[in-house]
Length: 153
Image (cartoon, rainbow, N blue to C red):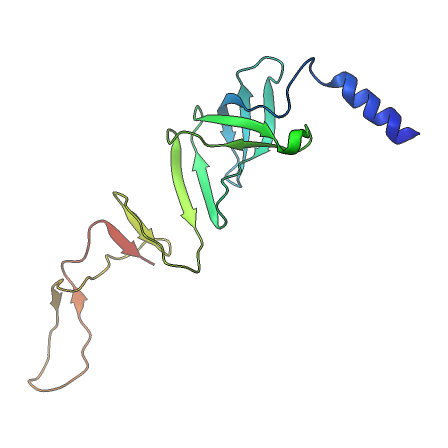
């Protein structure tokens, strides 16, 4: 009985004639940096929503988003308790993180591996080695011309 009463009250509290199977555009107000954001939905019947999960549809990927970024807010299977937002434009994207166990290909202006750090040496990059005697030896050197766009931790 109490569950039926609770559900009836929830139905009354919902905005009138809101299609929970539709997607509603909005703007990010705050990024909690844990894949949850506050969103100001353009439709006044929804208004501001807090701690809405970001669903990207790609396991292992997380993002950080700037306030003002545009998103679409939806409700999984039409359930108003299962809201989510989808980043449908690239604007406002501050960071993308990927944890993967498969080959990853990246096309980006700057790439940090394992948190960043010193430049990464590539085949053909110059190294500086000092105090080496002629012959076969294992030596340690300093990279002097590593990639300026890729760093590793």
